Length: 527
Image (cartoon, rainbow, N blue to C red; front, top):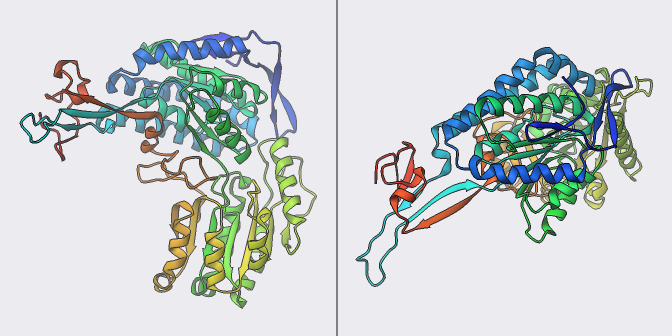
């Protein structure tokens, strides 16, 4: 049931007088429910509850946390059609996408449950004492990962389930032992409240401490800013625009106690098409990339917004074919009038740049909130000189850069901002001859793709979803997969500590049965 209220711990609350509604972009009309924005008092109460809960929650066994994560997954599934219908009404996305994203959300929760139940993720390391070592005796040292404390998660506009209320950031933080306060995204507040209610039911069924989760409504930036500045908050997770992520990063850095902000932000995901590949497969590649550029109306952080090739007749043919294929695709609905407004604004800014040529622009006779897909092209020299052309246009837009030669192609890649992904389309026989291109691209991205498309992010341990700034604020971490848990923990060492007072992960008897690094040997044996 949607009430429009906040969850402050396990209780619903609606003390404020500022309300707002979500929007159905398919029907081009507001949805029915009103949502109450969280007040300063409710924000403070949520953080205080989280701080208190962190003491117990941070020391819970992996088995208990796994039970909690699996219970969340079960309760989300129990929402059934209500969740799917609400999701569709707030996003304009089709039912199949909603069900697929729900499946991904469930999969993430269960993956983290399995991780913490097994327990070796804490990276326990033990170096035993050598009291008779000369000239200096060696102390007993033991190290493991522990939770940071309360985490604020900002819901993402383009993934109301997988990157929002119970999405990857939240699941990873819970697995680490951190309470979570979600700043619900205003575009899908109803979906967020339903998922929040599922989390609260799971909390109650598994006897988690009250305050381990809160869900706060917000129509603007005030609630998020207040949360980041609150001294009880210890880390932030964000998926969204460069401007939004950087603003949060700055706020967190200016605190008396600075805290980490793990923001996954803008990316144009360069695709390098080498000469042999474009000569042999240009037509097929054009069709494939027309589909990738328009997939989900281009509303993915991995959308291929930049295609790079070396001038040739084959590249010209590819550009023409890409333009033909992308126009054939029927336009689809964007998430919200604000989203399509930003798309049109940024696209117009790009199109106004000198030297840019429009190759394909869908006719303007489209439904309200439906995006017109666009392909442009520009000379390599112009692209190098004008960084405005490097900026992400969030939507079904891509620019093809025609480079003079391999040296200019390499120079363009080395001068790109940080990206989530980089793709190389090549024949295997020519790939080895372009190692400088591979090295340059590797230096700018978090994931290298060979002969594929960047759209689609597999949730598995080997996925790296992050990259050099501005793709993310810390390129050492991933926002997807079980290793994303490392964002919400820090290492601590115990020196000469009594065995019986050590955490179970570090005790001589290894009561958890986990894999540990003992005197430089990975083992599950007792010390």
